[in-house]
Amino acid sequence: MEAVLGILMPFTTAILIIAIIYAAKVSKDRSRNRLIEKAIEHGKELSPELFKPAEKVRRPTDLLTGALVSIGVGIGLFAAFYFFFGGLKFAAFGFIPLFIGIGQLVAYFINKNQQKTV
Figure 1 (cartoon, rainbow, N blue to C red):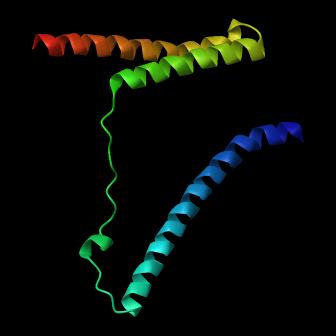
Figure 2: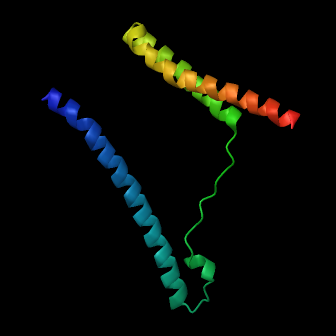
């Protein structure tokens, strides 16, 4: 029974996450539609911007922050796997985000130096 649960839990978790995100979107759309419906019932004039889809705000990414976060995640994973699983066998997986972060950090400093010279 435990083996079956061990196999099914990742799939069940993924399905639940998707269902929760979908339910939140449907709830948000229903709330918006109710607001529009009430405004129409009360004779309020609605702006055309209310019917446009919301634009996602994109923040400019800071390469230094991304690099430091990746390095921190790598160190955290390494430490957690090393202490909880006792050895480098699993702890080596922490090196993946660690070296990605180091690569991003090197790229940040290279680009920073090139922008100063230009």
